[in-house]
Length: 381
Image 1 (cartoon, helix red, strand yellow):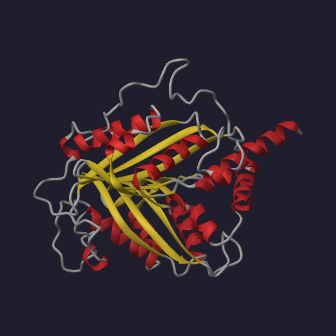
Image 2 (tube, rainbow, N blue to C red; image 1 turned 90 degrees about the vertical axis):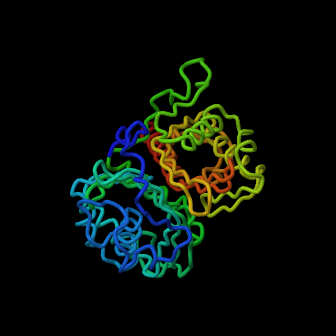
Image 3 (cartoon, rainbow, N blue to C red; image 1 turned 45 degrees about the horizontal axis):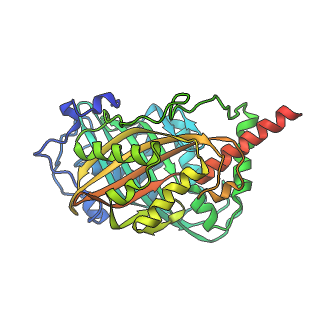
């Protein structure tokens, strides 16, 4: 299902009114992956066990990651599935199997708890899901993070999937790896340089190709947001709000659109409250990357059992590390070009944002800075 086929102009984008699709927030896992619930949504081509698209995402994720039935990837991913991550892209199913095994080696106790699933689409055109997971565990085994520390961790991940007839064929994953590294007491610079060296030796460098297109030449940013990705009014309002904040740098819009007691659940497991803290968080992200562009790639929403609507946004920022802000691990400005792959969930209620969940990975940005520095050193030799 392409972004074009999930456009509001297509009836396919909206859930059928008669369907009964579960929501994650208020339910235990046994409710979300039932053994006796009749199918509540049309799922042609899906395994009989699944009752709706939320059940599909919650149940198969649980079985693969918690019950270690990693082989389900063969029946739940296409052979040529593309998985976009914050430090690289995987282009086939077998590498996804291999990567999953390696990540589970280090964390035998890890549990990934589904926090929410926001979705759109249908079984004829395909589904799009945005799955927020809160993962916890302990680092007890030798693996990709080195010798075990025995320390516990909690981190957030958002995975966006495009699904057709029981198989994921495209996925974007943003995991807050920096949160894990810091909680385990490990050196992020060591792991960033290790990843950067491997990519550099494979012939990859971070190339600065000029303007990032936030605006053209000497023109100001676009006055109006492009809301063509929106399926409804609340999605259009979310896009307009983000355009004001991140493209036009009108951070005061947060005080207009967020409830006074709004909560921000962010990278490094930050929990912030109120307008001042949330404004500073977003101002600080731009402060680290002052010339960054901001582009929305997908948006979806569902009415929420708690009241209001939850909106999922997948976005990209591109810019240069030219200033000081909240990305403290990057240190003094390096001038290196970086790309931020991010995902956010917003809960609108009574015409205000009452909760925001945002995930991006600061370790990915540090890796990109290190890669740029390796490229510079190679040119100087």
